[in-house]
Length: 386
Image (cartoon, rainbow, N blue to C red; front, side):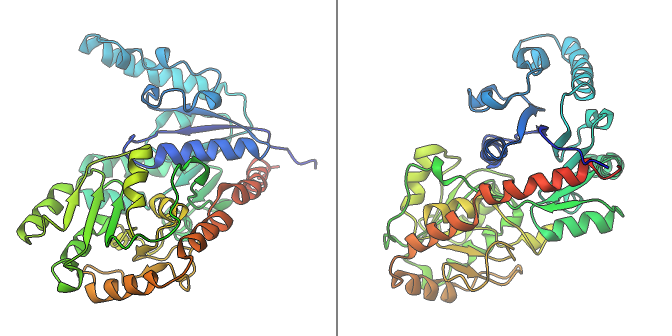
């Protein structure tokens, strides 16, 4: 039997929020999958006008934002908007059923129209969704995940996970016998205007991203109560559901001068702040989502810039022996300030540390190598039932 080839892919995704790293990840993936020889087109499931023309080169031919989101882009009545939401579902169903592609790449969401696809679809999972939803205690979304989540997975033809742990979780929890692919998060360093040439000695520790409880910034703030970090600053760049509690914690601990909240920042403005940092925080409480493994975008961003990083999880792409990663225990205890201070003193004496970090990121955390292997997985998916 002659195997089917894969030449065209429809990529369906929400971009979640301009405050997250997801838009950059999606753009990076579209760029490099197309560069690998696959014709990948993007069908967004939320308006993308806020991103300007960033995604224009990759948009699916049948996607017209003014048509799909006419109700959102115009000031119409409530009744009109309710009707149009139903009509939008029809537009997506029609587009997906008639799509000219070999396979659909679907970044997981509670998106009903994908169930009407005539083409095989694969689902990308970036977390253990149910475990994360439970931490938010949102009964509506948990109920949707219980019903719709199972149905979406049962119709899928393949699984993508950003870590092997997530793939195994999906297979075991939903009893799935499907082809799978570990597609770790990557970062496109070519987008950076600034990269560190050396550590500044500013004693600034930075965190960048959506501020969730699983990042464990409470653990780091509590560490600043120690004299070991009294002359350090923790700069938190971003917004999120845990921010208010962290501000209260810093205030009650009399750490307002040491812990600074700058709000969301982007582009060169963000890079300038990151450039001043000597250390960066990845995630310190990923276990609160039931995970032991992760491959955060923010960590790839730090390393691409040449910043040593503090983590408290297993990243399959980062060997434990790397001298520019401080691996802490995954628990809810305050971070040991003495360990952080000793690590800081150690990396300050490491010659060419920033160059070594950037070299490692360039050779191990880019999209090119993974994209070339991904096509073989797609071919396996489309030929599964032959």
